Length: 215
Image 1 (tube, rainbow, N blue to C red):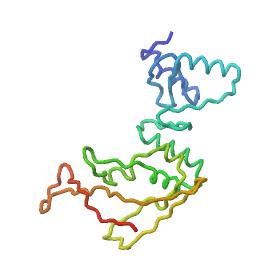
Image 2 (cartoon, rainbow, N blue to C red):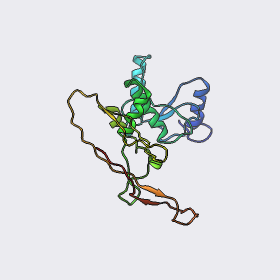
Image 3 (cartoon, one colour):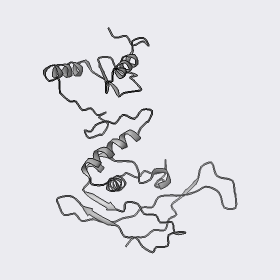
């Protein structure tokens, strides 16, 4: 009998597993669990638990890989205690991409080039880059990307950078010819205060005020 109370709950069992130098704790037929703060912990159904037990009985050296099935390709989940989403997932994406790509800078290019920019809530303006960077990480798009853009980030502050133009390179890593078209949609500018007033606004004033062109 499994007791979900403090004396014999999942935390107690998984912490005992950690004390015995276990690398993880997997319980079955118990529902949601608290688990251990020292090692990765999880729960699965009775049927899945019995299936794993049958496999390990026949093959004690069997190795199992788990994911959280939230739009992730199969990869080894990294255990980062006390850290919430999206950091662990992004680290996992980076780990998977780094195994397929030659350099970390190229991985960053892939993430930025395939991110999904989002609008400011209830507006048609893109959120500022200081708030969202290149956008939300698109794991599937990044892992299956055949196009790499370098550099994937341009600094256009004209008060210190006075270049009249910038060049970017587009690489096609796919196995088919591709025709590219370029477009531009500027992110909103955030004004923190009203003209002639030193008092900061509670909510910045967002405007589509940008000056970038492409040729």
